[in-house]
Image 1 (spheres, rainbow, N blue to C red):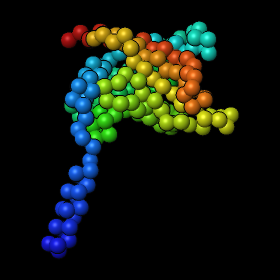
Image 2 (cartoon, rainbow, N blue to C red; image 1 turned 45 degrees about the vertical axis):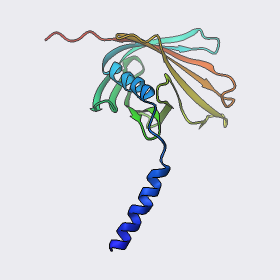
Image 3 (tube, helix red, strand yellow; image 1 turned 180 degrees about the horizontal axis):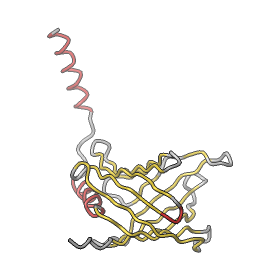
Image 4 (cartoon, helix red, strand yellow; image 1 turned 180 degrees about the vertical axis):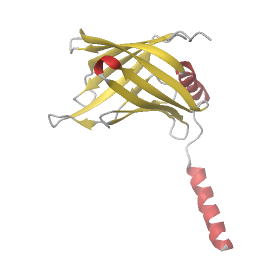
Length: 180
């Protein structure tokens, strides 16, 4: 039994030696700050865009984010009453893979995974099959970030990322704190 455990320790040690070096501290700091900055309640306007960038429809909703694991995992809920949409969200930092990732699932049961590098503001989905038999991918980019406001742009591609078309534009405004 001791030889077996010693063998496991040696194999484990060899595996650890091949592990990736630690994440860039500045990129990790930026990603943790992204999580910290979104904790709370947000009033959100979502503009769904036509291919030319014009607004096809605008709706209002809320997003609520709270810590699950401090500086690593946030859970959230998105609600858009006008569309009768509710979605659950996990937003997290994975230092081992050097990524920041968000997953979302709504009432339709479809799980969306959006992944980006630590320190970045853009996240993409893996390619997925379209209703027409093709393949598409989504890209989400956060920008114009302040303590009480930020914007998000969703774009999509159907040609493997050669061209990106507008999907939606969201403006997140921090909701006022409720009176005590």
